[in-house]
Image 1 (cartoon, helix red, strand yellow):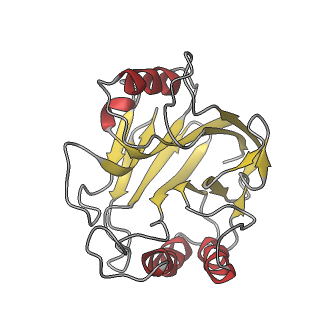
Image 2 (tube, rainbow, N blue to C red; image 1 turned 120 degrees about the vertical axis):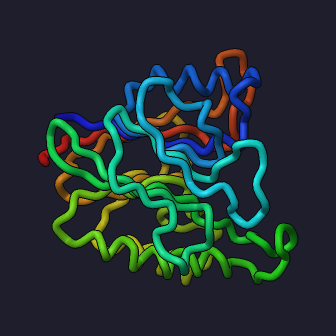
Length: 239
C-alpha cells in the first residue's frame, strides 16, 4: 500500500483569507492520507477526514483558534495524546494511532520551539535554544516509549535543517538523539525548490522507499502563502 503524508507550516494564515482558501484547496487536492499542519487553523484542512489538534496554549496565550500542530487523516484516530510528556514545552505536540488498510501506525506531529522562543517575546524567561533543547530532550523519551517494533512517523516543523546549517552542533546532536533509529527522508536540498527544509518527516523501516516532493510557498497568482514551502512524502507501507 502507498501512504502519503503532507507537511506544511502555513504561518498562521486564516481560513477565510485569500491565502487560507488557497491553502485549503492545495491540501484538499494533495491526495494525502495524513497531513501534519503547523502554525495553522483546523479550517485549513480538508473537510472529509479526522483531526487531532494540539493544546491551544503554547506559552504565548490563546488566540482565535490557532494551533501549533494539527494532524489530519482520512482514517479515524485513536489513542489521541496532546501532552506527550510533562517535560515538553506545551502546545507543540500531537500523537495519534491509525488502523490503515495495510496495518497499524502511530503518528507524532511536532513543532519544536525555534531558537528565540520566549527570549525577547512571550515570557522572556529563556536563553536562546533553551526551549528547543528542552523539547528535544523530552521528545527522546516519548519516541523511545513507542518501542523498536512500532510503525511510527514523526512529522512537523523541526526548526533545524538536516544536515545542520546555522544551527549549533549540540542542537543537531540532540535532534539525532531524540529521533533514535528513525531515518529523516527530507534532508538536504529538495527537488523542486533547491532549498533545504526545516519541516521534516522521520520514519521507521516498515515505511519503505520514500519519495519526497515539494510545492512552492507561493500561490497561483504569485501571492506568498507561507514562509515555508510544503512537502509531500510517498511511502510503501508494508504493515
